[in-house]
Length: 359
Image (cartoon, rainbow, N blue to C red; front, side, top):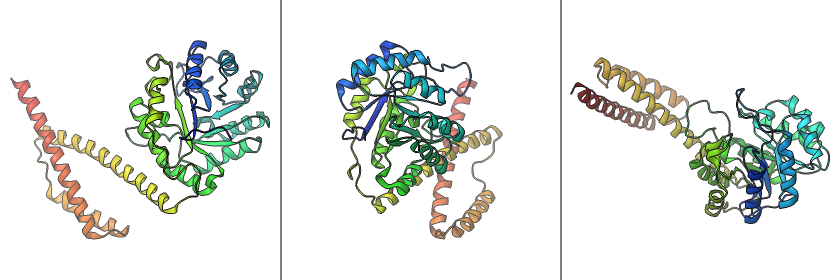
């Protein structure tokens, strides 16, 4: 097992290796701090669309190998093809991570697995873009079959199906299900950078990960994030990264204590509540659009027949789901009242805007 800090296993470094100076600056800062076990950096960057920065390739391997030798910090890179692994071996790089897009392709994972050598590892496997637990487990099994060292899961979130605050939906339930299946035989890290998508949210996602009793973090750290050639918004400076580590609270249950079923239930409730709030926020945005549409056409906010139809439907549906009818009625009335308040506020704002334009 790789060394861990009080916060678990920490992996950090820039999204992409961009220059020798950048790599050495980050590597030396991380080494001096002493809490990070691996320097991570992207050498080949699979981008969503062509024309974006796709990494510098083999040249970056030279920088990373030199940093590893001179600074003394183990290096980890992303690989997506057999030739990536083979080239990395030429530069003495033995630790890799499999990105979300690659994890989603069993053929690519198998190709990488067959290029690995027994002394390679650990290998970090990020969850696929979709919340498919079996696909994630299958990728780790393919890799593990060719390694003597550890395979480590990394939760980086999934592509969101609706508008949310973060870049990716955390899907904490995936990690909980993975923990239920493998217990502490499998370490699970969190990539708060890719879940958050923006610097200001990295800390809260990282703390959530520790609260969910995950085993460490993989964080993107760049000397000058504003100048980064990829994912500039989500990278932290070394100084901000160290402040983040100082502020995080380790899980009170420790890193490898036996599972507490009650705690797992509570964490599931927390995730469900977060989804409810996300949906209420999405609903409020639609209500504002309705309020604007009604104002422009002089339609009143309250429509009694529509309200009665909705309440009747929700009561019938909710009771079928095992909910108490009195609770359903109260919840519907509360949400409906808030919708009317939002529409009234929207109308007032539009009215003021209209008055200014008339003047």
